[in-house]
Amino acid sequence: MQIERIPRDAFLEDYWDYRAGEHVSLIAPTQNGKTTMMFDLLRFTDTSWCTIPPTMLIAKPQDPTVVKGLDMLQWEEIHRWPPKKKWTREVPYGYGYWPRHLKNVETSVNNAHLARAFRPALRDLFWKGNTVTVADEIYHLCAVLNLNEELTQHWTQGAGMGSGLWSATQKPSGTQQGTVPSFMYNSPTHTFLGRDPDERNRKRFGEIGGIDAKLVESTVAGLAKYEWLYIHRDGPTYAIVEA
Image 1 (cartoon, rainbow, N blue to C red):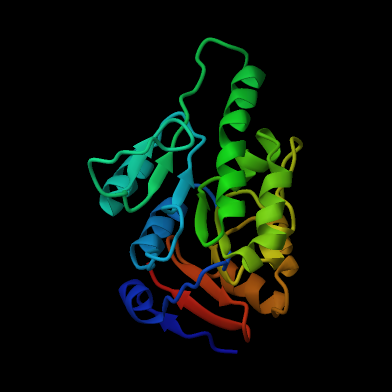
Image 2 (image 1 turned 90 degrees about the horizontal axis):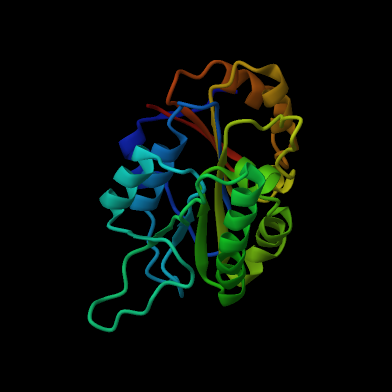
């Protein structure tokens, strides 16, 4: 099967079509442009229907790529949830929810603090409906912060609520600390897979429902850096998005 190659700009402008409640997954090794691709997709996504401005959950202590992306989208960086109501100006296009880390404490204490900060946001974004929740590093949220239950609720029940979950990860095969639920593979309408030389990681792609697993594995192995194999669940439909 010959998979069509589409220039990135053309894909974003002419092919990308997102609707309320659809889940999106991006999976690729580190330094393969996951966060940048996430921001590019958001830039070409109409979110005017959102009941809460689209919200990115940021667990890293710092990340210049995220800062740049939030600035590009004109999203407001906030450090507490819920966002403060500001009557003097318009509601922002989106939020980058970036809780302050606790310094000079045990790692477990800081992780528990971050989990407590994110849970109310995940709850509100799910139950309000017609929302977009962006989790840039889903592995950390699931395996380290133990937010599996809240995230699984989005994956398994969010579509009917219009509550879409956008997630990205770099280690699909997992680590000794934990792994990402299989719902990240079989729930999304839109899946983007980056080049991955690790066969253990590519094996998890077989969990994507309704695909030709061998075709996907071989295609991903042959991608160049910053290229993506795009899979739309309906069909399924495949395309290679060029760098």
